[in-house]
Image (cartoon, rainbow, N blue to C red; front, side, top):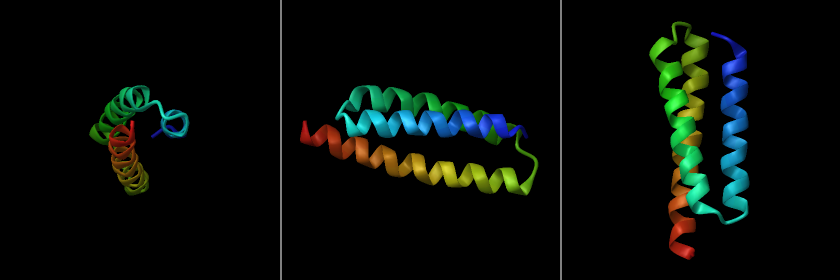
Length: 76
């Protein structure tokens, strides 16, 4: 699998973090959905164990970010 795909995911995750930092829950959630779809697509075509391990790390990270967005939404 191309490492470029993981770079795109990394950039997307950074955007989510930036939206959370600026307390923009709506944009953070929209970006989370977009990145989650990209991750699902990568998972569908992953063949190597290393790719699956990397994908699982992003799944855990996205779940944590989702919880943070929910908490942020409650604060606003």
